[in-house]
Length: 166
Image: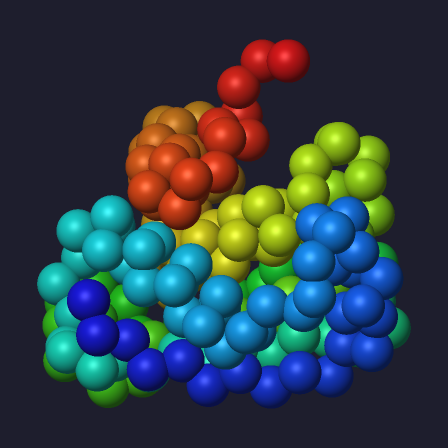
């Protein structure tokens, strides 16, 4: 799938975040685009070729402001998605919407869950992408469907099932 991803990076802790990989910083644009494209492919939602997604990497402070403003929750969260269209309009829209990721939260969660930052970040990008095309997890049936798509996308990316029992 041909997806155009516009990455804006306002997170200053990349070196520490990627240190658990024992390697230098990856190509953030390519990493982001691959995770998003894989999620959209596995979603089976029909989209325009070259559809655009914007991604902002930020810290907890900015994310907390967004989460309070848009969800009424005065705390940071790992990922927020802002879809530009829904339903059948998804097939005609050149822009899917925005994904905002708090890397501070993703770092904390990855450490707590004993995952690599890269794997957890890819999961958040997949999760956010699926929200852009209409998937949700507010009720059990929807959550199971969304998680199945996440598992499929993450497997294609070579990432272990994040929902598997330890």
